[in-house]
Every structure is written in structure tokens, then in C-alpha cells.
Image (cartoon, rainbow, N blue to C red; front, side, top):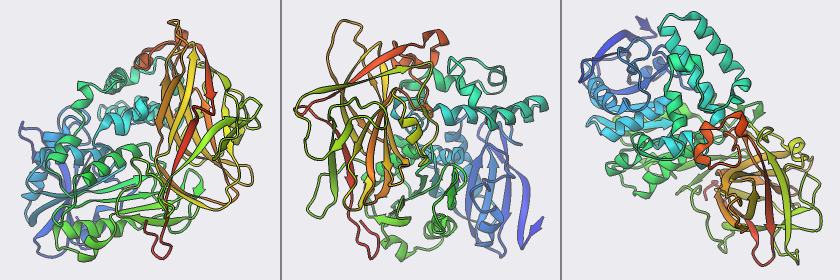
Length: 571
């Protein structure tokens, strides 16, 4: 088949080392070659080719690449049984070497794609096939436990459960089970009722038949050997290769993107191996100016097609000296709607304050005479101590009625903050704009009756019109006091990174409550977090959580701030 000068060869066979046959579509550019190869390995049917976020393979082929879109083992038209993630190390090695040997290939292979297609790149990179020259993983993780399934040590229910039914739907399609395929589609469109099912890892007839691997994800809530087998980061670091990391501020796998980039960044940079990081105002799908009903302006799309071409041309065709000189980190700043750059990732450890204005700013959580419950309570954030005597704020978390948080989008939470199950600590209006970029840290002294339980902390920006916009979140477990001990526990949370211009007149607010559901699975109370996946409706209890505000031992919010050279946006 010929498409605008691109020759398409369907159902090309790659034979793996065990004899399994994987099928791929190959898009050949005009001209005799040799040409470098771009390989995408994915589980959703090779004809789709991730065109929900990427240009069609024809576009890449017209820019001089042989493009190979392959169905992974057990998916689409490929043979075998699908074992998500673990199969992709050896299979990825074999697929890369097969792609490098295609007629017309220059022998240099790059891999691209996002989500599962991104993780297949990390798996292949861990095996280090000799012809793999560069990768461009988007919105995925090399360490699946920390970066994808259990950020903050909590099961990411809201994104994982619908995805399991998506994978089950495709298995039902392969089996010719149209009724189940339709049922899965309806569940994916309206997952609300399913996230309330308990146990979280309990059986569902569709998953039992078509995707039982979901139960394994739930059955290992603590990092163990199961997740070690699905952590490729250490192997990649032993022999790193150039990687263009693409993330989204509102993507559930942002932690995985940042963890992978920062690990490689810490390993050093050379002309023969360096890395880049791009974070846009994007959810998992799509990548453009809008996400979840929010419009981030005409520059929000970030021209990723150009970024991909430059990256792969540099490593597979000819070095680009300008690319080598550019700051490797590029990210979109909420509020200003500007793209910022940095020489190193600012999203890791909080920085100490400097004379130039970059560093960490601190606010104390204090109580000035009224309970902090609800948006109009007496909880405050202050830069200088104002409270003279210790005080205690208390809320009750009923696991049967968890507090809602369903995404990382900058949604207005002001209506929820009126509820007395939430403690709110709100700062004074900012006198001047601040630029925050990095991971906030929250230190809180608390105790719980009816615990263990969770303390969920949400950082918001209260705008002059009263809207309270989500910025960041952290979750940690509060020990119980049922053993007779009555001690304050100091929790230190590393919260989700963000980048925002905090405007003059805006106010920071910290919410403290017992859950962020269904973003994360709710804590049932009274049992360790490690047993959360097995909790049944009868296990749901109430917990009473007390938060101490003490001038001598302050609870503290730390925000990483940064100074920009406004001429070029570089930090």
C-alpha cells in the first residue's frame, strides 16, 4: 500500500527466540535509504499506533524514518499469552534487533510511545540490545511500583481499575466475546460504581476471565520481589542510553517520569549520552492546549512533533549541536502559561533559600482560636509565628464516606473545603508573585484514635475570586493508638511536584483529611495500609485524627520557589 509516497507493509513477522511470532506494520519512507528505524511496541492493536497523542506513522516516515508498529506478545495479531510488562524485556531485545535487520535499515533504532508503549522502551533498554540508540518514553515508569501503581505507597485506583477493563476488553475482542467487549466499554465510560466495590482486589467475573493480572497488582501493596521484577531502572542505570522523557502535570504517572529522568540525570551527562525532560499541562490523553475542560492557551501543546524529530535525528542521523547546548529540562508553568527551562531538574529535593530568591519558603500551620474545620475555620498558614500556646485540631474520617479527589487537574475544591471532615490552613494574600517549581514538603504532628489511618494533604491556590485550585497532594499513614500509647507522630510528606506562578493576591491553602478517593484507594481504618486491598465493607470504620499546632514544635509547609531570568525563562 502506498500513502503519499510512503510504502506500508502490513503484518510483517518478527520471530522471537522462543519461536513466538509477533506481527508489525512497517512504514517505509521515499528514497533508497538506508534509513534509521523508529519502533513502537504496544498492546492496543498496531493500526492505532498511539495516534491519540502522536502523529500517524506516515508522518514520521515522510521525515526519513522506517517506522515499525508492533503488537506485543498476546495482543492484536501477535501470537502468545500476554503477561504485561515482564515479557517485554526479552521480547523488546528481540524486536529491536529484528527491526535493525530490516531491509533498508541503517542499523540504528529508536523507540517511541507513551503509557504501556513507554514502559516497553524501559524494558528493552534494560536488556540493552546493541542496535538501540535512543528512546523517548512518555508518561510511564521504569519502576512500576513507585512510578505507576503505588505513588505515595497507595494504590492508584482511579486510573488503574478502568485501565484493567480496557485490557480485558481487548482480550474479549480477541476471543470473539462481543457482549463482554461492550460491557467493558460501558464500564470504562462510567467507572464510578466500580471504584466503590470492595475489596479493591476482589474478583470481578470479567477480570477473572480476561485480565486476572489486575489481582496481582492489588495483592502486592508493598514493594517486594514481584515489583523488583518490574523495576528496570537499576539495569538501565548500569548502561544508560539517551532518553527523551515526556510527562504531564496532570498525568497519573508523573512520578514515574520524574523518577526516571532524575536517576539518569544524576548519573552524569556526556556528548555521547544525555537526556531531556519535557513536562506539559497535559493529562494522560490528549496532549494539547486543553485538559479536563481547562484551556492552557495556544502555546500549551509544546510542539512535541518537532521535539521528537530533533531528538531522533540527533541520535540516529546526525548530531545537532544546538540541541546539545540547550537546557535539557523544559516545563510549562501554571498561571503564567509560559514554558520554562532549567539546566537540572528542580523537582527533586527541596532547595535551601539563596540570596537570589531561589530556594525554599516555609509556612507554619497554626490555629488562631477557632477549629480549623471547614473553609472558614481558624487554621492559618503564617511565615512568622503568631500562635502562643499549643492547640489541637480534630477531624473524623469515616471510611464509608471518603473525601473526594478524582484527578490531578487544577479543579476548584472550595465546595469540598466547606466540609468539617477537612482541616484547612490558609495563608494571607501574597504581596508579590512567587514562582514555585518542585516538590513541596509537609511536616505534621498528629495522632489517631481508631487508626492506623491515612492523612491526605492537598495543597491549593486560593484565587481572588474564591476558587481553590488543586496544586499538589501527599498521603501518609498515621499510626493507631489502640496499643495504649498516646504519642504524637511526626509525618513528613514529599508531595507531588508542580510548577506554578502564584500571583499577588492569591493565597496558599493546605487541606488535611483522611482520603483522596478515588484517586487513591481509601484506607479502611484500624488495619495497616498493607492490608488495604483485602478490606471488605464490614472493615470500614471511623478514625479520629488530631493535628498539633505548637509554636515550639511547628508543623510546617515548605514550598520550593525559583527565580527566572525573564529574558529566556531559564532558572
